[in-house]
Amino acid sequence: MKSSMGKAVLTNQLVFPVEFYDVDSMRIVWHGNYVQFMERARCALLNMIGFNYIDMENAGVEFPVVDVRVKYLRSLHFGETVRAVAGLTEYENCIKIAYEFYNNDTGELTTIAESTQMAVNMQSGQTLFASPDIFIEKVNALRQKN
Image 1 (cartoon, rainbow, N blue to C red):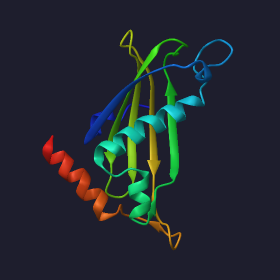
Image 2: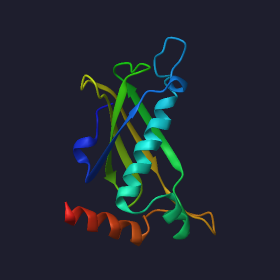
Image 3: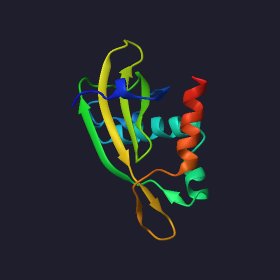
Image 4: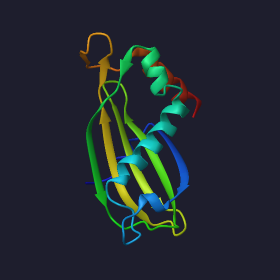
């Protein structure tokens, strides 16, 4: 899996520590916790756009995750700091986000990942094959600012 970050139209990053509850008995981040790291980075990106999960609900749509891909390159350990970069690579038909996780102390790329979410009408339960106009407008407005 190659990183799709180069296709990103918007990016955001955050830095956070590897906590004890994130690691296994070898003090290495347990592989399943990277999905939680992705969620942290995704929420920060959606907040930056101005269309977070509460905004989605208010717009009558939800965006369940339909695909997740993760490639582990290096380990992160308890006590280290993570720099998570999330990049929006698709937003008109679905929300696709590329992720890169770095050891913030060394700058080393440790993990690349990608998630895809599809819009669903909350009332009917029907899959929407286009993102809501309000989301597209917010992304486009932010892109024009940058």
